[in-house]
Amino acid sequence: MSYRVSNNIRVLLSALGFVGAIALPPWVPLLVMAMLSLRFAAWEVIAIGFLVDMIWFSPAGGIVASLPIFTLLGLMLAWGLEPLRSEFLTR
Image (cartoon, rainbow, N blue to C red; front, side, top):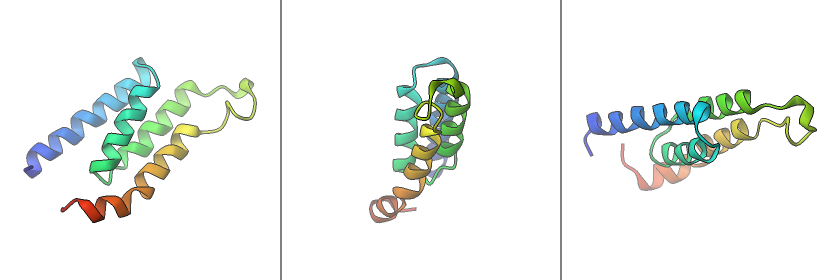
C-alpha cells in the first residue's frame, strides 16, 4: 500500500473515531481505536479515548464510572501493540 493511500486511510479512520466519539455508540470509537492501533503507531488512539472519556464521564456514577477506561485502553492499544506492529508490518 502506498504511503499516500495509507495516510488517507489513517486520516479517514481518525475522523471516524472523533465523530464516533461524539455522535455514535461507544463501540464505534473502540473499533476505530483497535483498527488504528493495529496498523499505525497512532497518537490519535489516545486522543479519541480521552475524548470519549470526557464526553461520557460521570463523576456521580461511582468509582467504576469515573475511571478513564477509554484513555487507559487507548494507552494499552497504542503502546501495547507496538511489538506486534514492528513484527508484522514494514514501514
